[in-house]
Length: 114
Length: 113
Image: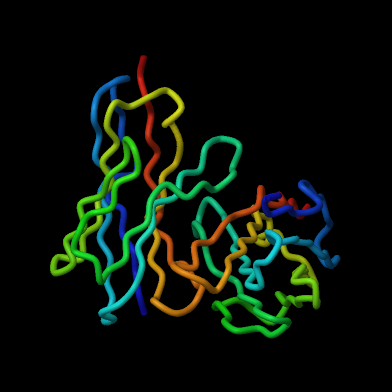
């Protein structure tokens, strides 16, 4: 069974600074997807970024980028120029290539200080 | 496009009762998945429906069931409610094209007293 581990329960960052959230996963599959979701206090889950395991290039979406290390089974999220609106719980999630079951990590609370 | 909608948003039930939650996916999406979110267990996959058929099931007791209608709307039912069923229930829809990204609804907050 696949597992996802987020070892940082909570992180803080100063506004305009950069922060990196860690995620490791365990799987025996070679093809899969990885996602970062954001859940603000409203509880609405918002997709931040996705990575296909067969792509070597790291995904980037505006201020959000990932460092995907397939051999190490590591998938970290970097948030640049942090904004107050980035404050939320961030979940790392794994999904097999075909199928819609997401396996989530425990989440990391990100606090942004002004 | 309208997003995923879930009704009701909040629900209070008593132990032993049953409850039905509803989810309407994004137009054109045929897959609906359900997740339970609790402070203790985090986010856990309940089941997935595609074209009115359960395609995938998580590790939950038989008290948790679901169905999907021909218009892709889905319902989940929990019978004989227990205190531990208090949770945020999230549904997510996806298409079967591309990377199958899942889009989540706002959730239904169920409180069992």
